[in-house]
Image 1 (spheres, rainbow, N blue to C red):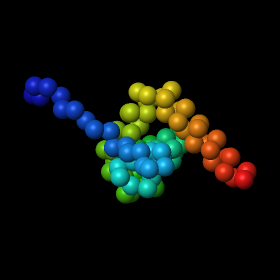
Image 2: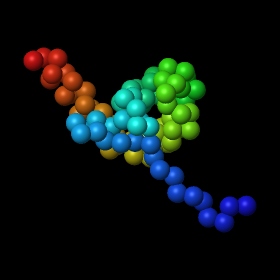
Image 3: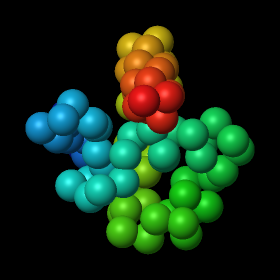
Length: 88
């Protein structure tokens, strides 16, 4: 029996350009969440990005679901910035 649940660290880091990456890799939060929103399971995502540990994928999805408004706003800003750069 666990006397007190351990604290879990979410495997997300923001790089020098403000991009959130997963598990210390080049895979961005945007990509993982886009796949999840398209119906991919954590196992499907792991098959596409085997550099990501499966438990990290579950943790990122759980974090996204708990902070959806904030992360949707971040993803929207990233999409707008990408579109602006494509226009230039």
